[in-house]
Image (cartoon, rainbow, N blue to C red; front, side, top):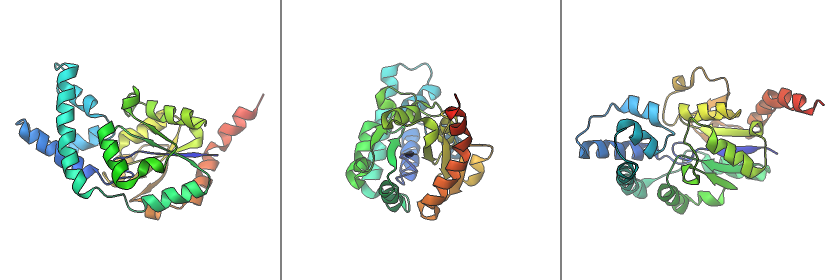
Length: 231
């Protein structure tokens, strides 16, 4: 038995353009300047509170929460109109479930944002577990969200394959001892250079072959299983 652990934003749902528009609008509303490329490369996969705490270290937790809620309200205005799935996501998930794999969503998204995606596309019915900072877990690149998903699914971390669109997510998977698939839906392939835990880099799910990923992953973790079996 293996598990697939999916990030949500930019991995299962094509939400990053909406988040980008929301942050742009939020920055403009507050009279701030944004370097878009630098901002999204350094923050994708982190929670709004973590991002804002770095931007405004002197602000109180309550003030940060208000700003985060404001940004997410703007995001949902955009996303409600045209939030789509990443190409091939539904078919890939269906194939994984038919093969007996356990599935989880592991995301830095907020409950309201998750609820919107789940309502529009029924994603919560696809998976066996959902983990996020709403569970009291640290966001990526910390491995907490992935560790908790593996625990809930009753599997060892190295039996899980992570699907991510952000370097911080790939790093969180690495820290969790998990192999990963990087999707270039948000950043180019060059953003994932240097990671030693990547099984594949793909533009979306349409180019991924389930059996090939499983076989490749098995070759990687076979030595780990051999070590575990020794007395």
